[in-house]
Length: 181
Ligand SMILES: CC(C)(COP(=O)(O)OP(=O)(O)OC[C@H]1O[C@@H](n2cnc3c(N)ncnc32)[C@H](O)[C@@H]1OP(=O)(O)O)[C@@H](O)C(=O)NCCC(=O)NCCS
Image (cartoon, rainbow, N blue to C red):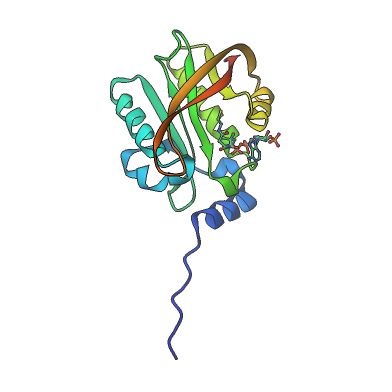
């Protein structure tokens, strides 16, 4: 009789059991790196890892910070960046995403708090972000964390359609801000 290979626990299982036993605060938050790009396919469409790679390149000249909350096996489970060039005098958070099966556990909150610390560390007193008008769950999170709508805008980025053809996705967004104390 052949022995079955031991099942490796998935990143989701490892993260969930650590959160259940020791809470979200026990998880590590640190810089997302180029080595992580193969492990963030869950964070968006097929073109998304490339846009994250471009964001990581901007870290080198201090325009961007990019953080991740990691599962106990080191894999990213929540990611997001802050852009210091997008709006003068503020840090603009963007590309926030938590692995789908781990949403609603406090990981996004932990990441946003860490990004706010980065913004404060640059001597800036205001954090901003944009949220699509049809994303009420994310808006509710930002409101709970103290963000208020101050304007509206349109943003666009490249996506692939169901036939793999690139197109420009245009989003109507609310712009939100928070004074960092
Ligand atoms: C928005 C997002 C980053 C929040 O991360 P998270 O790890 O779920 O955040 P938290 O667990 O700290 O907070 C959960 C809150 O987020 C909101 N939320 C947004 N989408 C959610 C989802 N799919 N499931 C559960 N909560 C969600 C809820 O308002 C929830 O509020 P509550 O804690 O009062 O119940 C994450 O839900 C996500 O990746 N969504 C898809 C991508 C996206 O919309 N990104 C934001 C673009 S502006």
